[in-house]
Amino acid sequence: MNKVHFIVNPIAGRGDATFNKASLSGYFEPEQYELTIKTSNYPGHATLLAKESLAEGAGIIVACGGDGTINEVASCLVHTKVLLGIIPMGSGNGLAESLDISRNIKRAVEIIKSGKTNRIDVAMVNGKPFFSNMGIGFDATVISNYNASQHRRFWAYLKAVIKSIRDFKYNEKINVEMNGKSFKTRPFMFFISNSKVMGYDISLTRMASLQDGLLDVVIIDDLSKFQMLFMGLFILLRLDQYLKKIQYYKVKHLKLAFEDKQKEHLMQADGELHNLMDREIFVNVEEKALHVLCP
Ligand SMILES: Nc1ncnc2c1ncn2[C@@H]1O[C@H](COP(=O)(O)OP(=O)(O)OP(=O)(O)O)[C@@H](O)[C@H]1O
Image (cartoon, rainbow, N blue to C red; front, side, top):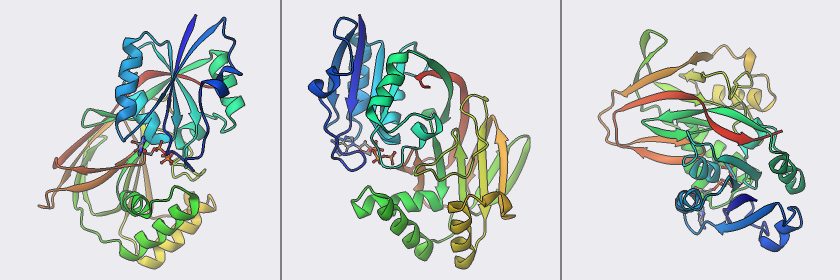
């Protein structure tokens, strides 16, 4: 009997997904699958539920939500043999898009039932996993404004981008050590990606692979407001490879140290905002440390 546990984030995406045992049992043969459905009641709850499911002997734990939910669930599965399933129900669904997992529930369920798995890399920032991407600077500001808007739709994201362009301040001077070199930057954006797509099919790292044992680093320095708008348009039109201001690197690990004396630094990881209290950030990749059901 396959023990499949579903962890559902009821506020992910539009927050209107109806997901319960009755709706799911139609997809799974009762003689083959034992289904358990759990609901996340607050931020961080999905991690507790996933740990509980591990203790209950689940063979597959399915994250039903977006990148934030996947992060909470998958963080418990790193370096285990338990398989991660994904039913994309978030707003951006960056990791699901990078893995070609359909937003159509029936097709996403077919992927889970197929049993086909890939082992993917897991990125770590100061010892905590992220699966899609993290960033300091503009993208963290966008997430901060997006969260404040209380909406989880594309137009809310676009409004957050415009507000962030209007208000953005360069205040994070960083010492960077990577690929045997060290240099200083005061970036508009310092973005580190394990996967291809950020969400909403927008990407800065279409050449990234979840299985190459490497992280893709994008550094964008010093932009005027006009250049920010221009760059945003180029990224939406998938023409970002023509922008000279964007520097790309592939790394196995890197170290960042903030020079500024301010106590907290804003960082986003898998679309969730963190106030970093540490002056130094170590980022590395654990190769193929997570088993994911994918097409
Ligand atoms: N019951 C709940 N009430 C409020 N927040 C919750 C609840 N359960 C989980 N959360 C939080 O909801 C947040 C958003 O979830 P998630 O990232 O999956 O959706 P999304 O933002 O719509 O999708 P994406 O990240 O793909 O754009 C996560 O930070 C998670 O901790």
